[in-house]
Length: 77
Image 1 (cartoon, rainbow, N blue to C red):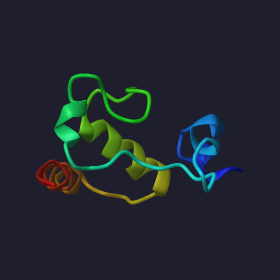
Image 2: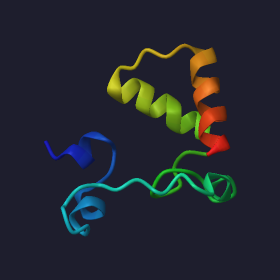
Image 3: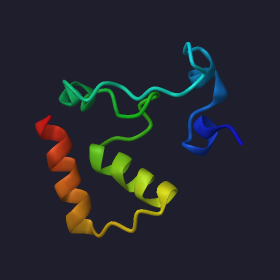
Image 4: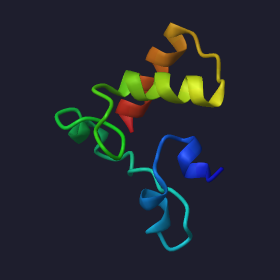
Protein backbone atom coordinates (compact mmCIF):
# COMPACT_ATOMS: atom_id res chain seq x y z
CA UNK A 1 0.00 0.00 0.00
CA UNK A 2 1.22 3.49 -0.85
CA UNK A 3 2.62 5.22 2.26
CA UNK A 4 0.46 8.29 1.71
CA UNK A 5 -2.69 6.16 1.53
CA UNK A 6 -1.78 4.53 4.84
CA UNK A 7 -1.54 8.02 6.34
CA UNK A 8 -5.02 8.91 5.12
CA UNK A 9 -3.97 10.88 2.05
CA UNK A 10 -5.03 9.81 -1.43
CA UNK A 11 -2.28 9.13 -3.93
CA UNK A 12 -3.16 12.29 -5.87
CA UNK A 13 -1.78 14.36 -2.99
CA UNK A 14 1.50 12.44 -2.95
CA UNK A 15 1.96 11.74 -6.64
CA UNK A 16 2.12 15.41 -7.59
CA UNK A 17 5.30 15.95 -5.57
CA UNK A 18 8.70 15.50 -7.30
CA UNK A 19 9.64 12.44 -5.25
CA UNK A 20 6.11 10.95 -5.16
CA UNK A 21 6.02 11.23 -1.37
CA UNK A 22 3.48 13.07 0.73
CA UNK A 23 4.83 16.29 2.17
CA UNK A 24 3.39 17.69 5.34
CA UNK A 25 2.57 21.36 5.62
CA UNK A 26 5.29 23.48 7.18
CA UNK A 27 4.88 23.79 10.93
CA UNK A 28 5.75 27.49 10.97
CA UNK A 29 2.50 29.41 11.19
CA UNK A 30 0.56 26.33 12.22
CA UNK A 31 -1.95 28.57 14.00
CA UNK A 32 -3.18 29.77 10.61
CA UNK A 33 -4.90 26.42 10.07
CA UNK A 34 -7.09 26.85 13.14
CA UNK A 35 -9.79 28.61 11.12
CA UNK A 36 -9.88 26.35 8.06
CA UNK A 37 -9.05 23.03 9.65
CA UNK A 38 -5.97 20.89 9.81
CA UNK A 39 -4.61 18.19 7.48
CA UNK A 40 -4.33 18.62 3.72
CA UNK A 41 -8.10 18.82 3.31
CA UNK A 42 -9.12 20.46 6.59
CA UNK A 43 -10.81 17.32 7.89
CA UNK A 44 -9.58 17.80 11.46
CA UNK A 45 -11.06 20.69 13.44
CA UNK A 46 -8.22 20.87 15.96
CA UNK A 47 -4.55 20.08 16.21
CA UNK A 48 -5.44 17.67 19.01
CA UNK A 49 -7.59 15.76 16.49
CA UNK A 50 -4.57 15.45 14.18
CA UNK A 51 -2.37 14.18 17.00
CA UNK A 52 -5.07 11.66 17.96
CA UNK A 53 -5.29 10.51 14.33
CA UNK A 54 -1.55 9.87 14.09
CA UNK A 55 -1.47 8.31 17.55
CA UNK A 56 -3.92 5.66 16.38
CA UNK A 57 -2.47 5.30 12.88
CA UNK A 58 1.11 4.87 14.05
CA UNK A 59 0.32 3.03 17.29
CA UNK A 60 2.15 5.58 19.43
CA UNK A 61 0.02 4.84 22.52
CA UNK A 62 0.18 8.41 23.80
CA UNK A 63 -1.92 9.22 26.84
CA UNK A 64 -4.10 12.34 26.95
CA UNK A 65 -1.44 14.36 28.77
CA UNK A 66 1.22 13.45 26.22
CA UNK A 67 -1.11 14.40 23.37
CA UNK A 68 -1.83 17.77 24.98
CA UNK A 69 1.90 18.34 25.54
CA UNK A 70 2.63 17.50 21.90
CA UNK A 71 -0.07 19.91 20.73
CA UNK A 72 1.41 22.70 22.87
CA UNK A 73 4.89 21.93 21.54
CA UNK A 74 3.69 22.06 17.92
CA UNK A 75 1.92 25.35 18.58
CA UNK A 76 5.17 26.80 19.92
CA UNK A 77 7.11 26.17 16.69
